Each structure stands twice: as structure tokens, then as C-alpha cells.
Image 1 (cartoon, helix red, strand yellow):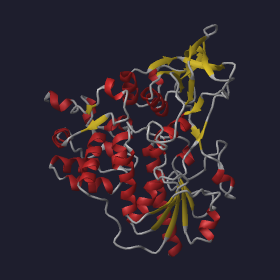
Image 2 (cartoon, helix red, strand yellow; image 1 turned 180 degrees about the horizontal axis):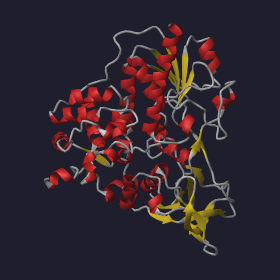
Image 3 (cartoon, rainbow, N blue to C red; image 1 turned 30 degrees about the vertical axis):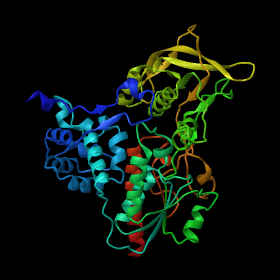
Image 4 (tube, rainbow, N blue to C red; image 1 turned 90 degrees about the vertical axis):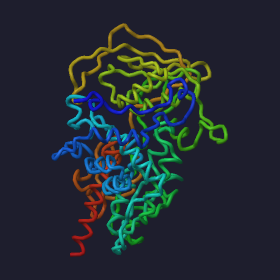
Length: 465
């Protein structure tokens, strides 16, 4: 086999030294010729394992086959049958552990660059005014969606495509959820990508009402009994940050990654023409090793700081995507691995001046299958810093569960919902995404929204019968 068929067509990126000081998109994607060349590597397997690896079950061989013949509109229509957010997924999905991770081509070489091809097709459609195809007519049934994040947008889009009258209620002033407040501009441009994807969902007939806090502005019971909705989907995400509980966490200069990224992404704190400043010191420590930690670290770097990532396990256990770790290293982020914070140090004015850490070593595997980090006695040391960002995960805000009688949640305040349909303990109420699982990936939230849409459709049809 020719060597050029064994390896992916390289993807153009900004130079690390240049991009480390700007918020422009790092990955530049494929052009038309590069996309077609990469599509030729697809084997078009009869039993395509890549499709099974996609949480929203895109017909990957068919859309790539359309790219191969330069029928990009067909490729977009194929993707749109399954996904409401292809330009997003092509940028932030962990394809290496999903579709691309199952690609047969990857056994003896590099898997087909499915994500970058999806991104190319979605961007081409946007540039050429192609939108997803909606239902020919409404079916007369109303469904309410709580949250305009990936789960909610997907559920809404799928229901609208089959004729439902769908309204999304969003607590923030912009639709997009984690896509607008959590993921930085250099990974996911807001105007160019997120807003266009939201517009595509709205083009299907979906209505979005912002600044509506369900549990305060209106309750789920009121939506079902007074507002005429026959079913409700809860896709409110997980925006409640977690902390370590170590001494000094209340000092000035300690942030949750959630707050730090929201200020920077949604409120545009990185731009001088926005009156939404953010405190980012000269030396920042980010605690955590997931994608959110990488986002917080790379954002801090672009704001002019020297940045350390402190993570208690080794590089092999980092939960962040390999691509994000690679980009962070290229840009100059310092990784302090097998290191765990024990105290945040403050000066006489209660401003952060450093963080005390202890060295770790890996012991036996824990319940997650990863080797458990064990402190090394007598190995404490300090890292000088003036800002600490905690990126330890998030949990659902309890507002909805505490104002919805009979809605079952677990001890972490995650809504208990059926894995296949999204059905909750309340008749007509469905849930999915981070509100159910806790913080996870965009595509898994989309998969949950898709299943819930099918569950809601079956529920309403059963009531009609």
C-alpha cells in the first residue's frame, strides 16, 4: 500500500509561537483539495465500525463517499440527518476514542481523519448557504427543552425535524451552553461556528427564549400544566464547580475553571473593547488534567501568564485529549505531573502568593481502572504563583431538582434517567447530557439528546394511540 494512504493528510495549524498570543482558531482545517485527498483513504467498509463509535450514529462512509465525488451538499445532508452540530463536533469531539478509534484503516496505519472531514463539510455548507432540512409541516404537539447546550439543541433539532413545535428555555443571554461559556475561541469560534449552528437549529422552526431560569422564572410543572407542553427535556448541564477543600481556597486569586472560562468566553474578557475584565496574574497554576484544565491553562497563557498544570497522576492518565495536551505543550504550558496540591498560600492581604504541593507515585488501580496516586512522604514543595484555577469537574446545579417535586436524583444531584430513552421518574419529563451524567463531552450530551428525542416522540405517539 502506498505510504500516502497509510497516513492522514496533514492539517494546517497556526504556528505555536504566534497562536500563544492570540485567540484565533488554532486548527485551520482542510481545504477542498485536502478534504478530497483524505476522503480517498476511506475503505468504505460494509460493516463500518466507525458508525458504531459515533454517539449520534452518523453514516460516516456515505458522507465521506460524497466528499470523494465532491458532492459536498450531499455529504452535509447525510451528516445533518444525524447531527445538529457538525461544525462543532468536527472541532471538539474526541474522535480518536470514538469513530476514528474504530477505523479499520488505523490498524496498520493512521485512521481516516473523520472529524476534520466533518468540519470541512459543515464549514463548506455554511459558506454556501446550505441548511439542514426540516419537517414539511408541524404535527401539532409542543415540547419544551430546558437548556440550549449540546443536549438541548440536539433534542430540539431532532424533534423539529419530525414536526414538533419546540421551544428552548435558556438561562443565559446566549444560546449554546458550554459551547459559548466553556470552550475557548481558539478551539471553537463563537460567531463563525457556534452562532451559525444555533441559527441552523432555529431554521428548523425551533424557538429559543433566553434569560429564562427554569425553577425561578417558571417551573417544569407550570410548563406541563399551564403552558401547553406535552413533554419536557432537561438538558441544563452541569455548571456547579467542585473544589478540593484544602486550606486557602478562599484566598483572592483562586477561581474555578468554570468562572474563569465563562468570563473569558461568554463575557469576552480577553477583548479590550469589552468592559468585562478578568484577573489573571503573571504566574498561574491550573489544578486538573482534563480538557477544561487545558482550556483554562491555554487561555491564561494567551492573557500573558506563565502557566503550570498540576496533576496528581502521570501523563498516561491525563483525561484530556492527546491533541489538546500536544497543543498545550507546543505553546509552552509547564506540566507538573504526579503532583497534588495540599494548601494555597496567601499574603497578609489574603492574595494568593503560592501553592504547596506534594509529590505522588502511582499505586494499584482504583475503581476507574487508573492507578491510584499515593503521596510520597516528605516530598512537599512550593510553587510560586498569584492565581490558582481549580479544574476538578462540575456537578448539576440543584435548582431544577429542588423545585420539581418527584424528580429523582442521585447523591451527586444528577438526574436519574433511563439510558436509552432519557425518561425520568416523572411522566413526560426526560433528561440527558451533563445534567444526568455529570460533566462529560459535547458529543455524549448530543447522543443523550438524540435518544431523548426518540423517547419523547414514542411517548407522545403512545398517548395519541
